[in-house]
Image 1 (cartoon, helix red, strand yellow):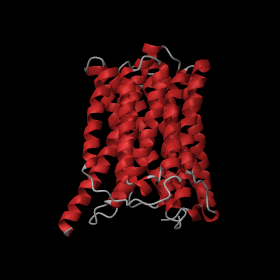
Image 2 (cartoon, one colour):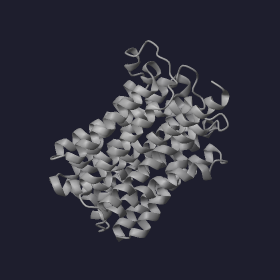
Image 3 (tube, one colour):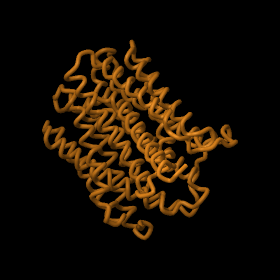
Image 4 (cartoon, rainbow, N blue to C red):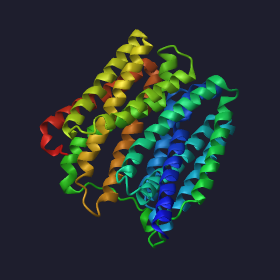
Length: 399
């Protein structure tokens, strides 16, 4: 194949993988502004709501731990199509759900499909990374999830406020777009040759090499604070806007989600010339201060300070996640990547779901405001630990 045709094929593949990954993340955050409507329709508690959220995380985590490298053996396209298909099935279940049990089924299937697409699309963008932009795949892997999550929250809010039957219509629209994504994937050139070992690749590999353990100890509180914040907002953010701030508008709930993720997208670009040490200190400080400010805005029932606090958290999230992960990733040796990345996902997805689930169960006893304050206190504690760890082991934070 002439170079020009090969380059066009690679560029087409890169943008297709990125677009499909983005759309699947849009679908992943679409339920968040719809949760209050589902609660009214099916009459479930905040504790059940967070279980609906957590089962998605469990499905995604198990899939990424077991099938994360499956596309290396059977090809990128088959795994991408399987993932898109599962996400499409989940949208149909959401659109036709007649009980809370079906919401749990939809979220579990969605988690498995999202895990397959996330792992495979990340590998696919690396395969098709444009040579004139060597860092494009890394940027896509970090930016695409946030773009998709922010867009999904806003999209669902628009459907709730502007269209009839939002619990059905938004899912049918997304189903149509997913089918277009599947067609687009059929036109992508396969970049992973068939090779043996597909079944063996399903065995989870988790572990921290000895030379990385000190760096993991420094980075883990940072990851837990960042992902814990994301989980709290995706599971309870729209409910907090409605119940605590008294704003019964799904679009505003979607804006609350976007207010966290959009600054998180911009932050690494703003801070790209900073040292990791500076990013980690400032990121932990911004995330912790934003959480404290959020609690105060709840107590004052002040929507504008709430959104400002959320944006501050998003900025801190972005630079803290980037710098803490970079501190570890830059020292991973050949042959360690699979186990280290799997361990990274275990830490982060547990941190992503656990605070939200605990907050959901506490809501039944203490109310949503007090439960969210306790969850916020947990994140603030993690930020404080991150600051202390970074100060004590600043020699490990290098770029």
